[in-house]
Every structure is written in structure tokens, then in C-alpha cells.
Image 1 (tube, rainbow, N blue to C red):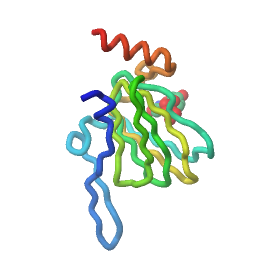
Image 2: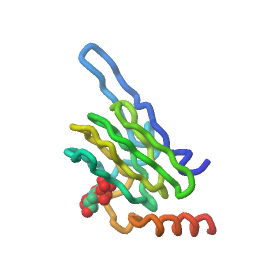
Image 3: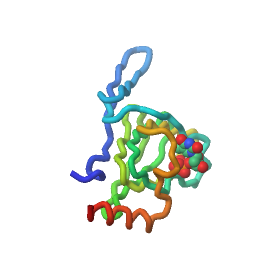
Image 4: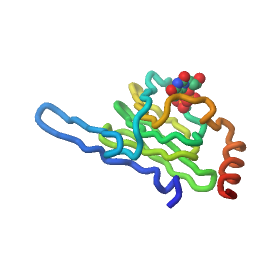
Length: 140
Ligand code: TYD
């Protein structure tokens, strides 16, 4: 199974009652990594695009805490697209995957749980470099 195949929506454990909903993410139980960092995107202007990069080693889980947005994933060959609009779904993204985010609604909040602290050296920000990286990692 490729890393792109493994990128999927996780239906988070959710406890519903009359007071509302509560969704839970426990590292190592609901997601296959320890959480070393949390960041979130918000106040994204209409028409703006985020992402536009891949990570070499980072695992992430993205959750639409509010509003909606689209996430396109590719391994350089195949693609997958997700419309994120429910807070009980997390999108699990494996290393070595290029992501583009767009179509943010007003008030959209994308919370990202990440397996590592921020290291610019883990980013690949050029798509041609990404394709070369994927090709060379297949040769190993
Ligand atoms: P970037 O990862 O390019 O944002 P996105 O994927 O949402 O489009 O990050 C934007 C800027 O923020 C860039 O200068 C790096 C910085 N940044 C940090 O300092 N720490 C972080 O944890 C993240 C995710 C980004």
C-alpha cells in the first residue's frame, strides 16, 4: 500500500449527548504518531491557496474545526482530493505527499496535529524537486 493510499479520513471517536459533541484524538490510538506540534490556519482570505509543499518525514492529521476547505494530495503520480467540512473527520497525511489546500470558506479553521516540531529542512517546496525526491527514494 503506497503512502498516498494510506492517506485517508479517520472518523474520530465522537461522544454525542444533549450538550453537543465531543471528538477525541489520542496519539498512538486514533492516529499512528505522537503529537509534537499543533498549529492552525484561520482567517484565510477567499481564493487563497495554502500548502504547496511536501514533507520528507512528517505525519499530520488535519481537522476542519469550523467551516470547510479542500485538500488535494499527490505522490507525484496519483492524486486524491478531500472536501473537509466535518469536525469529527481527520485527514491523515503520510510523509512524502505533496498537498495543496484551497476553497476555504469564511470562518474556516484547519487544525493540524504534527508528528515533529517545525523544521524547514523537512519541507520540499518545489514540485520538480518533489518529483525528483520521489523518484530517487523509489530507487533506494
Ligand atoms: P507553511 O508551512 O508554508 O504554511 P501552509 O502549509 O499552511 O501554507 O508555513 C507558513 C510560514 O509559517 C512559513 O514561513 C513557516 C512558518 N511556520 C512556522 O514557523 N512553524 C510552523 O509550525 C509552521 C507550520 C509554519
